[in-house]
Image (cartoon, rainbow, N blue to C red; front, side):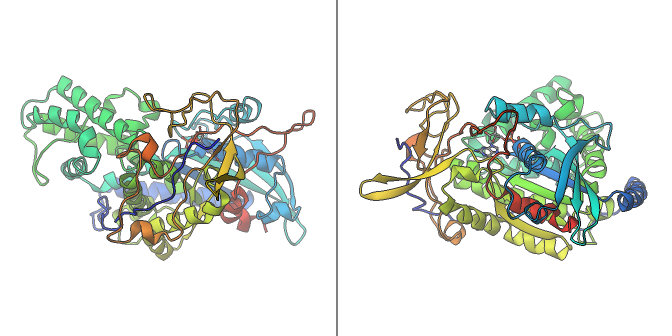
Length: 525
Ligand code: GDP
């Protein structure tokens, strides 16, 4: 059965004309607290460096926006290493030099443990996707291996899973409340955001920023602002750049007063009258930076040796050109976080030490393999400018299209004299053939048991057709009806595994071994 009949991108868009909006200022004076932070970081780095001489350790950050695939990636990676998965490109394993990989107690007692066992059970035994990342967690894997010279060694791999939304908060450190308000308001007028922001903006228009501080007005504003951000994140719009990150991914701050603020329509260089709503919102914004953003970067981000950033680029394609453009803006903002040019206030404060950064487009198994290189090329095109910058900062950067768990097989399906490159899989129960599982869409509801063939659409051969000036947009869910979109990606169930007795084989994947080779291959020689 074929239910998606898109024929690729016929009307590419001018995405290149949209300019980035969030950037970190390069010259901000250091405060006393910044200097203290620096001293603390330097002291801890020295301790960690000493420790890693005794037990070589790689601290690998795994991040990406909500539902990008972090939980599935870590689970599949550990499962594959522990069970000697098929990783031909991961040299240490393919050369037979890995003796054993085992889980061990993590180093940070205050950070929740990544619930590997439950996630494996969900994937392998129940064939359902595990629960997604909602806050930071950690997992330690110890890899016993033989070095190329023949000596037995151990590498400690500490994986730190954290929401990409939190990372995108970093640029806030260089912005005042007033500047952040102005930028957020400007952005809320663009593209599909304008429609989604209406209710929040209508409420904002009723507020007197210079009037007395009013707690219930602040609560309402924060709620409506959060609803606007959540609506932008919905699969139909799939926007990426939606700070402050804790509004969508509160972690342990859910319901906390630290999140009870919202932008106000105030002058970018103005000063609030004391006791005003403006003063209250500004104070809370500054508290958010001090209590949430700074500690996160100091305690977690700045300590990472390697970083993988997972990106659900297909969700953006599903939604449309606006979402792809927004994703590109998010990249710029993300790479600003890694850019460690010496002059920046943030680099002085945070000094990220990640020397390898991998951008990975996930869920490549939603596409026929003929499209995997195209997905990679599009991602490369999107991070191109950013890659150049990070190179300057001394980090090696690469791009990959992967699938941590391959849920599909491939087949050519003949239709109207042509053979369509299709994928075969079992759509999750409740998924809808009308591209996604939105209520009200026409088409068939899947039962979670039947295998179907899907033609998801074809990505353009030349990524420039997407980004060239004057290009015409493709059709996504944001603007078109379910049946008119150029891409359709269905949520498939995890694949069945052939088990023999107690022996569970590693999960099938696409290019997970290449990601591993880039991230830790050089530490296992
Ligand atoms: P997180 O929010 O980044 O932790 O995202 P998850 O790892 O929970 O992934 C979100 C959803 O994306 C899952 O529930 C799956 O439906 C889908 N997904 C993630 N990785 C893969 C993959 O490798 N293949 C397929 N087919 N789907 C995936």
